[in-house]
Image 1: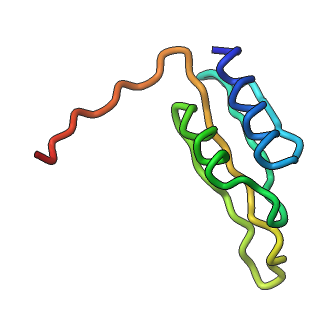
Image 2: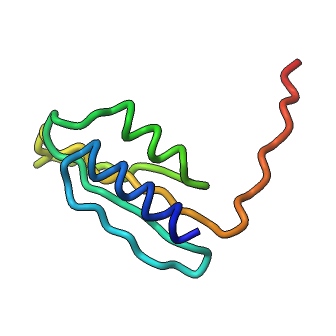
Length: 90
């Protein structure tokens, strides 16, 4: 699990050029990076986040919002990832 968390962190660092934060949480690890500017490889950021078990984004949108500030993306890595739901669409 720790190796997978660090692999996600390395991918995010490479895709964003930003410092990535890795924090141990009760369930596993939370990896986060603040996005700023336009230099991010968006596809690689999304691919790195998808390698986690849970992911999301917390934006910084307010009256003083800096257009270069894209907020923070994060993902969590667990030792026993939740099972995927079966496809019931067809």
